Length: 97
Image 1: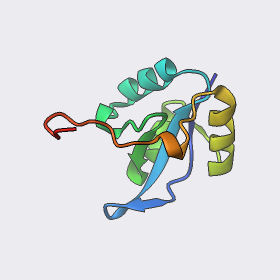
Image 2: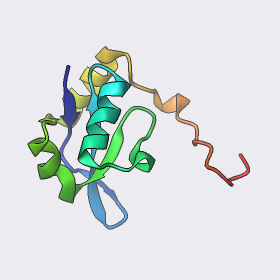
Image 3: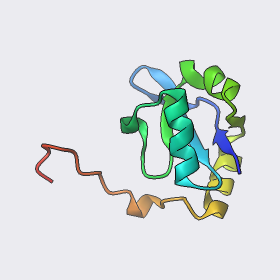
Image 4: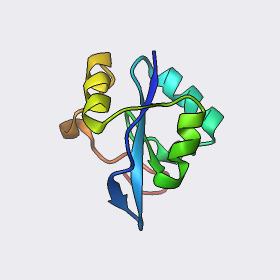
């Protein structure tokens, strides 16, 4: 059971982003995110999005650095991966959806 983090490669909002996942359970992922102080709004169905400036900190807290392909492979193998076709926008409070 591991919490994994990929390299910050994904551009958005003027920075690069990484993904943090668990290869075991969402409970493990959420517990790690809480310890790291990641906001719940950073959670996207099966992963947390984290800015590049937090990468070293997350590794220091125990996240295992892996390549993006390895992260996705292990997430799929865990059964936790949410396919793109199932990634409908989350209902936001006050959004009317």
